[in-house]
Amino acid sequence: LKSQKCNLTYSRILIYLFWHSQKTVLLQNHKMLKNLVIFIFVVGSFFIQNNLIGADCNSVISSFENEVPLISGWMYRRGDNLDWKDPLMDDSLWIKKNLPDYGKDKSVKIIGYHWYRCRFFIPENMKDWNEPLSIRLGEIRDVDEVYFNGNLVGQTGQTTPALKVDLHKDRVYSLPKKFFISGSNLIAIRIYSSANMAGFSISPKINNHQVFSKNIARK
Image (cartoon, rainbow, N blue to C red; front, side):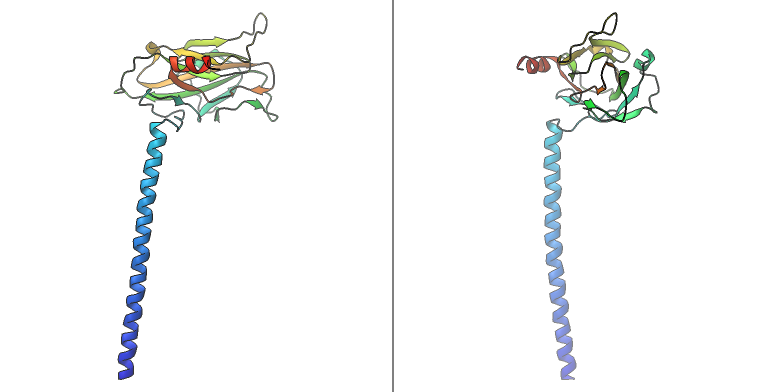
């Protein structure tokens, strides 16, 4: 009997020690999880506030107070058709690309025309902006035309009657406020390449026109 009581007491001690150790582990894990959640929230807020997270194509842009990089989700197609500037044109079967994509592509012959299209959405209750906006495309190989909601807003170079290019021009084109609409907005870029080179050296960005002008002036 005495032996049974000792065994029972010993078992209770083991159970208590096991429960206490698990409780300590759970408390430590809870604290670690709490700290992790706080860290993710702080870092995420920093990136969002400083606009370090790109606004992918097909995303909602709720403000133009900071620079808006358009990095992923661009629709790409080789060939040429001026109807491709139309916002109503279906590009769902085009190839998706992330920008920049500058350089040679040995797997695809890209001499000639090719198009890039990117949609973004503006909510109806978006805060109005007073400063003029522009899109910066950087250097493009070779000739380009940029359409915003079907309207030509900028171009560099020409293909006829003779090819004229400006390989080192940092493209910045104004986006008139009158062309913006609530809902879906489309940027369509038509590029002609005379060499087997892809087009964009940077990811396109939308920002205050004066900011772009000052940055380019410092170069």
